[in-house]
Amino acid sequence: MAALVCDLCGGKLVMGAGGIASCDSCGMEHSANRMKEKVQEIKGTVMVDNTHMIDNYFEMAQTARDAGNNAEAESYCNKIIEIDPTNYKAWILKGKAAAWQSTLQDSRIDEGVNAFIKGINNAPKEEKEELIEEAKEQIKSLSIAMISLRAERFSKWPDEAESTGFISDLAAIFNTVITFLTQTGALIPIAEIMAPVANKINDAVCDAYKNVIWPDYNGDPNDSDDRANKYEWQNFIERIGYCTQLVEKAISICDEDDESDIQRYENLIFLHKAAIDSCSWDYDFTSWGKSWHKDWSLTNEAKNARRTMINQYETKIKEIKAAIAAKEVAEKAEKERIAREEAQKRFAEYWEEHVTEKVALESEKEELNSQIAALNTSLNDQLASLNKEIAGIPGKAEIDNIDVRIKKLTDEKSSLGIFKGKEKNALQEQIDKANTEKKAVQSRMEAAKKEIESKVSVVKSDFQKKLSPLQSRFDEISNELTKPR
Image (cartoon, rainbow, N blue to C red):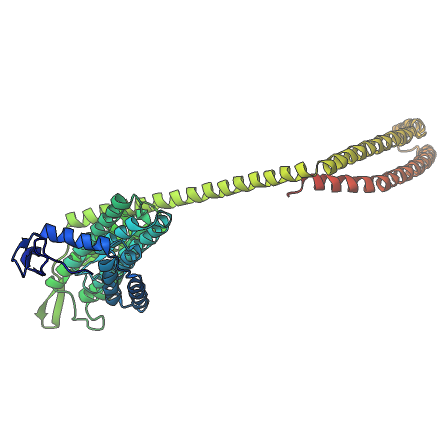
């Protein structure tokens, strides 16, 4: 770079405080603004190509980042930005490196997001959308990671500070999302962050209760004398309060009422019941040893307030389950509707492409239908004729006459006195003879009927032989015209 020289005598300028420079020859002072102008003038005339340095720094930054050394990666990105403040790739990588150095005590997520925004604003138009999506994913991952750190702390130390920390963390996440939206116009669906965050909070409460809160209150289960004193009980109730507050917060930050919310409401019910059943213990010495008695517990008013909340939670669980069931029914019906419509569309499109085939099949089906109808008509005519023959078999009048004769002989026999045995025997012989005649007529009629019925069987068999191939082809065509495509 060319030397900075005095405007008056051309002597060498020496930089002083506040950006003011003095000439070491004539002593003339040059203001900070003038010095900036002179630097700009020199830059305008002498261009330094630092591309190779930027490429090297970026490669080293990326290598450090891949190795998990975010501090080193950030340092190299800063070197690039000092050379070229508009290098969007360096800003994006710096954002990742800085943000992932965050701790609960020193969150650098906002710093990282601001770097993302600068990278996006300096990026070529064709790359902005991809970088926005990348930044959104980073913000979601960072938010969940920070909540995970808080969840881990709360599960070990379920106190007021960590409970309040959760609330602050959630507020910070919302602010980050809003900042990103206002600066880029890109909306991060908050549910994509809050659903896993709510799970982290709920899991932290469960772990804290199981591993810390309950053991501290319940004491050693193998020691009958290790019972909660007043301080331990009060601590238990306070911790239950932090837990219920956080679980309710987990429910409130999720828009969807789903199976996860059912579990959270069940956890709230469990926590409130634990509080209701809890107490502290004290003892008196008697001749038999220690006599334990309950010392402190919730007031009836406090217990009833918790029971009211439990009833509300149970009602909410029923509502969610009903809504889930209704949603499943609606989704199933919608899937079936879509499937039907798609099937109908495929069906219509297939036959639009096979019109000639469809016309030929329909024509053949119509001809087969006519042939089947003609066969049925012929069968019905033949059966009607044979049934008429059966109805016209001679013998009925003859049987009727024999029946009249038998009745007359029977009546005559019944009118004879007990001493008319010879006459009765003669009449009985006539009755028997008449019955024999009747049976002969009936046998003759039955033989004639069987002969005609055999003709009916032949007619039906012949009909079936002719019908079967026609009906089979008719069904085959019907199936071809109606089967799914």
